[in-house]
Length: 323
Length: 269
Image (tube, rainbow over all chains, first blue to last red; front, side, top):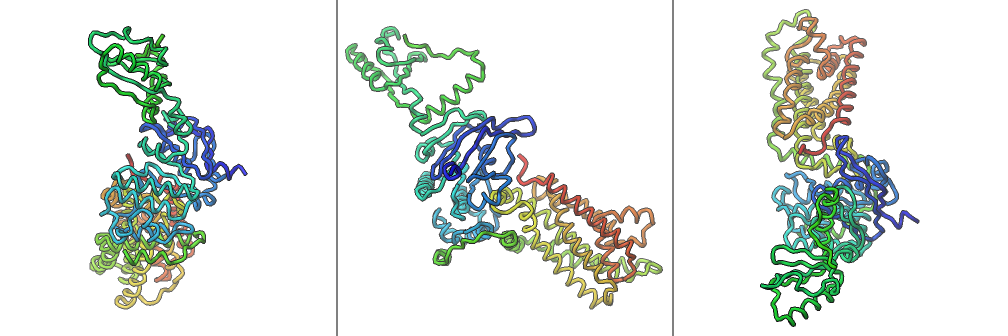
């Protein structure tokens, strides 16, 4: 059955604010059962606007959303009991204790876990008698996560779940999310920590200005990006003194003062050629930096490319194709 | 810690939730919160019980001859009016604004609670306080002011029930016009003052000039006062009662419409 396969199915989704500003401009993706899908994007890329439509908090201006085979807005009774939501910022009454907040939420949640179990999941069991207002920012995020997990959801929406957490808290949350996924929970995660997406995501999409700029498995998105070698040209040398770059598998280069930055899809070949040349020429390549493509680089490049495209090609990129 | 961890031994509930169950959970949390907010508690519980005594002296000095009213039949509806204004309306304006500013409403909307359940559930403790207070005030007025048994109790009951539905809705509308908890209390002032001056709580409409009285009849608290007073004196005509009910229903419908249309669930940015 299709609904069992595609737990989240989004087609040509659009969202417009105030009748004019289009925050989501035709987004299409789907998430299979048990998959962890990450939505990345710069601020204002449309991540939260998209997720809110999936959560059924607003009606799309266009397109179609299905969660567990149902429209999350018009068929909310069928969807809500099966999903868990953690908003980017959501609150609990500051004068309630942690245990009271969990109890309140439990009364509104189908098949709620016992409060103690939920708090134990996020390591807050010792804080159950503390008022919400006395929790640290990270503890509040963990309480929010505990409540998102309270109903043992089949689908979990996590909007920047580790913002404000320290390194240890972040690791703990990652481990918890991994366990949930191992148990078969489908997770849609938004984050601006690329490391988080690399650690957790089966697949991801990079949103930019309301559109999906890249989508796929982490290694696919990264593989589509070139690796880089950068170094300072030795004194007395000019770029023309380097060995023919195309023969080294270099696809392009940029110069910034005396610093040269090479782009390549064949990092080992290019690096070997360059280092052999340097040895034979008896020069030292100061500031040598050999770097595989990373998600961060992919992310920055996609944001940059999209920005350059929106400027309608007026600016010739400072890259010269190697001959 | 230990007390909570032992909860694990309880079997997990697997049943779905009901609207009543969800609102009960929310109401319980709100009741806890009212108990922890001394300011709200004072306004909600103390003010409506004390205010009637302060207006009593002015009622004593009124010329009630020819109006068919007694001190008791003026004071009792006023006391119920104060309870609706302070224990229900004013308290709930603060509650809705506070929950919005703390992003509680936004968070609640992601769960199984429907919008109406969130607003109604949060109103349950205040409405209960208002109801309990009204009953205490009726008992007190009966005991100390010799108002006697109501001649048409159904009017009084109807008036109180309409008030207990209308004023939470008006509170939600009012909360929409504020940016903070503090400004919510300011936003509540106009309707609060207007109701105290114009709805027969301090000055009965019967002693007002006719033209002014007919305008004041359209205020949202007036039908409640009219019905409760009529319930005790028994001299409210069916025509008059119908008019009062229509006014109350109109305000309620208008308020519910305004809430559905304009209620703000999260703070302005």
